[in-house]
Length: 103
Image 1 (cartoon, rainbow, N blue to C red):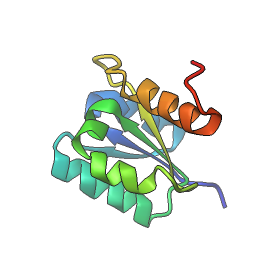
Image 2 (spheres, one colour):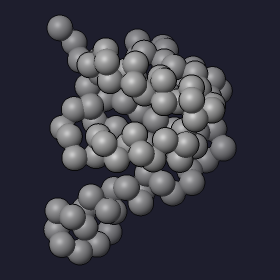
Image 3 (cartoon, rainbow, N blue to C red):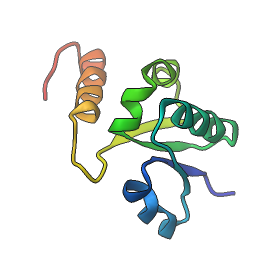
């Protein structure tokens, strides 16, 4: 059985992911994002791509899953471009692993 991959964001940002067979959830408000995220977790998605704008709406949900192996939560920029949240998250994880920011 193939691993499930989900994507959450505005329609303009995540619609192309449907072409690859990903589970696509359109969400723009904190409530919609939280519900979509919880649904993808319930469906046992291995990877959840989340636009940075959506991630900014549910930081408490993301904190719960940062220390877990699955699902892997990957922040992606939306159609407006990057807000730097994804890079910040990577830098924090590298700093935890190495002991200093090497990026």
